Length: 73
Image (cartoon, rainbow, N blue to C red):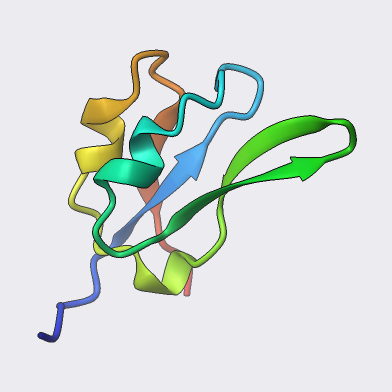
């Protein structure tokens, strides 16, 4: 299955994120990941090239820590 590349990509505000991992579970493209970095778990966009801008992660986030921003590449 091929996806059309979107003009939007997910972006995580690490200050608002509580690392519940709902976004990781909901994303079918495996764009978001959580890892232990600098003494705490951090969720971030590890594969922005896979993001199709569907917004499912934005809807799933209970802290409103994810937004879709314009893709610059």
